[in-house]
Length: 187
Image (cartoon, rainbow, N blue to C red; front, side):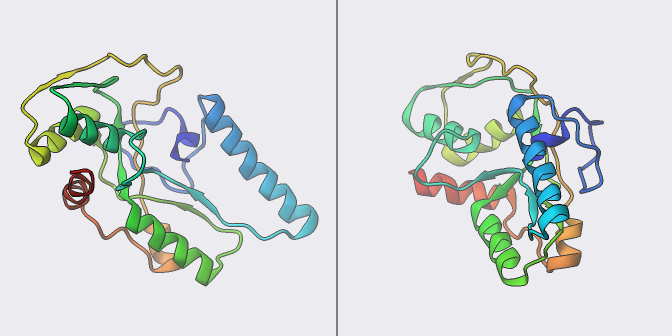
């Protein structure tokens, strides 16, 4: 997860070399898993590839995640209830993630770490505005109606350059195009 990077300077996309500063139990567990894989390689030659994944969207069967949550509320309700509007996130369409997984399986880049996702971070408030336009939502958005997450990270963004260099992979689906497709799925 990109959350392993924790609090970083705003405006600088994360690379594989960005220092990890996990600030929540979830992120600490993910860093521990990476360290365990490093140990397994050292002790037993166990092959692994690490993906530090960004927010993925484009699901048609789960509205727990932020993009799907916003879209489904806008399509079904007059009022949308969301958490904080100010965290910045970047978003990777599910088809691009599947393409990345296929590249990793076929090319087997053992020992590599890849940051996933496009350099397209925006505040959740702007994401909601894009979804409003794409859904035609005319209702109200009530911010801060979901409890603040302890240890909230306010900036997550990634630079997929290394995946491009090693795997020839880059995200293809632009955010607005992917959001429109996701709206169509839920409509």
